[in-house]
Image (cartoon, rainbow, N blue to C red; front, side, top):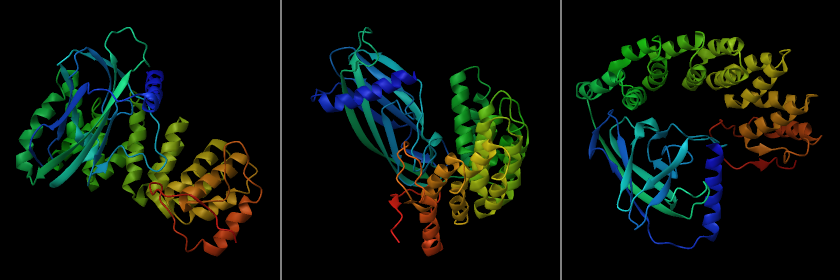
Length: 405
C-alpha cells in the first residue's frame, strides 16, 4: 500500500506538469450533518463525490484525514490534532480505488472532532480542498495509470451554540451503548466520539476505562481531552503501570500526552518510564515527554542521562534537549560539540538550530561538521546567548547562519 501511495503521489506531480485541462468528471458536495450544533456534541462532515461524466471512472480513495486521500482541511480557530510541527511529517495510509458508474456517488462520513478541538460555542470556518485523481474504471490499468485529476475548494461555516450537560447527556447515551455493538464500525465511531469530545459529566466513566481491559485506548484519549486535575493524575498512574501487552503503542501515547500537559511534577514519572522501557522507541518518547514537561527543570536530569554508560541513553538524552525549549539547554549542546562522537556533535548542531533558529554550519548529510563549529557557537553564546530568542519545538521560522563576529 505504501508503494501504491507513493506511485500515485509521484504520478500526480507528473500530471500537474503535462496534463491539459479536461472537462469536469466529478462534483464534490461537502455538507454538515446539521445546520447548528450544540457546543460539545459531535460534528460530522459528509463528503459526497458524484461521477458527472458519461463513463465509469475509478477514483483514488483513502481515509480523508490521511496523506493519500487527496483531501486537506483547515479550520480557523480550532487546534489541529494532526499538526506535525515545523519539520512536517511522513506517514502511510491504507488506500485503494473505487469504481463509480455515471450519475452515481459515494459519501465519506467524517468526524471533524477527531482532528479538531471544536467544543466551544462560536462560528468556525472550514476550508476543504480535494484533489480527485481518477482513471477509466476498466479494472485493467496498473496502479499508477491515473489519467486525470480535478481540484475542488469549498468553504463551510460551522455554528456551535451554547449548551448544558443536560442537553448533551441524551446525545452521548447512544454512543456509550454502541461501544458494545456487534457492528465494528459503530463501535469505532462511538469510541472516537466519546474519547475526542470527552464530556466532563462522563469523567468517572472514562477513568474507569483506563483500568478496563479493551477500553484503555478510549480512557487514554479521553483523559487527555478532559484536561482536569483528576484526569491528569489518572494518566500519570497509567504511565506508571506496565504497558498494555496487546497495544504497545498505547503506552507511548499516554507518555506523550502526559508530557504535553507540561507539569514539571511529572518529570520523575517520565524518567522512570524511560528506565523501565524495554524498547528504544518507548524510551525515546518518554525522554522527549520528560523534556517537554520539565522545560528548564529537565536540563539537569538530561545532563545526568548524558553521562550514562549506554550510548543509546546518551543519544536519546541529547535528542530530547531541544524539546525543553529552554535557554539552559543551549550551553549543554554547545559543550557536546566537543564530543569525540561525531554523531553527538552533528545532532548537537541540529538541536541548537531548533532552539535558536541559527546555523553554525551548512550540513548536507555528506560532509562532517566543520572543526570550527564549536568555537563559532561559543563566541555567539558569549556575545548574544542571554538576549537571543529561544524557540520551542513547535515554533517555526527561517534558519539563518550565525552572524560573523
